Image (cartoon, rainbow, N blue to C red; front, top):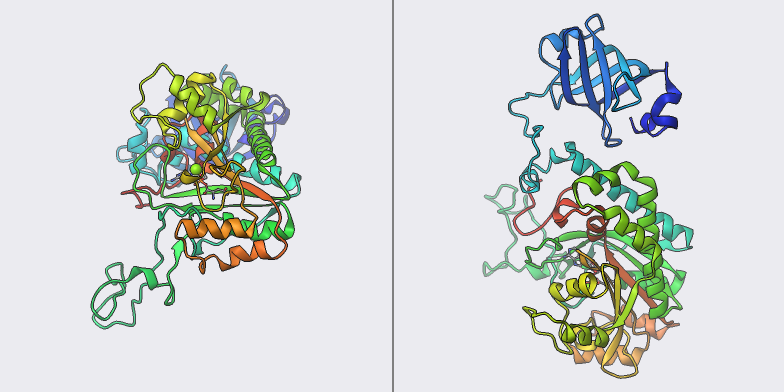
Length: 475
Ligand code: 4AD
Ligand code: MG
């Protein structure tokens, strides 16, 4: 359907062609001897209006009441000029086959608009709605544009591992990997209750990756760094996991992250790359997902097209962390979390900065206090701050977190020591500083937050096909 409707003059160039449409019935209206069936195949938001006379093959399906919302159909016909004003072309049906029936009473997707909360409980059927179809097509376009941007700029894609022994962010928010041994223990059937235990009966989750501790990765950065210090610019794009028990509209336990790593680069190069990347992907969806973006602009967030166009055109505001704190202290506003130099910025602070202080533009904040940032960030000459940057956008807050990495062995060893992190775990990471170290920098962009930003979807659980958050891993 996208191919036809997206063609020259919304399909008029293909009049008279014999076509087959396979998809799901959205509506069926019987008007005396003419029946109108709207079919959607998920390739675009538009339906194909299919018109059936009572002498067409398969009309008995209409008579028997099988052409219901949700049923899957295969329709053959001829593309003709539409009499209606809503579309330029329609399919004159020659043959209709019901591929899969759908009971109109029990089908959970009804014409009446369902809440997003309800749709989350039927995550297997919500892709049949306009909103989720549109979100997933835009998500797909953003993924494609991501690879396109980095490939066109000479970056090499690196697959970072999902199972790892190190905690990149040092925040202790990792899920543990464990093994189930269903066949080796008598009296147990396989299943989740069959958990491994030590001799004294205690479960030791931490040693269970073939006798060693292993975790699901929180970030592919450290692995990306090893390849950046060999292949120059690289990027990863894959799933990452955080065991943070936070029920917010911007946190998931499983999310996808895009992590470029630039060799022979400093924080300014990193910020320039983040800006160019964000502008590129935003421009890409504006140009290539027009129908879906119009839908979001009307139904999800009024004005989103204007807002995204501004992002694609304008320079982003840059502030140091110290400036941002000053700005918050001067704000004529009482925050729930008090502001002082050294504090982490909370979402209320981020919202004030992006939405009130700079009037709705992305903001990059740099040079954060080293005590609130990860061990690998490069210390600035003041000894108090590190070369870190966060890119904040209105509504979503932190979209990107990045930094210049500490490439000096001595500084890095001292930092691990100060933070009481185990040097042995990071022996290979330290090797990168021993053998041909280079200044390098990178960032991580939360892909679902980008989907939120680009579609206007409020809750991050609606920006991924199957959200994983506390209490939801059913589908
Ligand atoms: O700021 P973070 O924790 O940075 C890192 O992981 C670095 N190692 C990245 C790097 O420099 N290569 O996470 C990066 C981004 C955040 O800005 C946010 O967009 C997203 O990942 N993010 C989450 N998205 C959804 N759910 C969560 N629980 C997230 N935690 C972080
Ligand atoms: Mg961060």
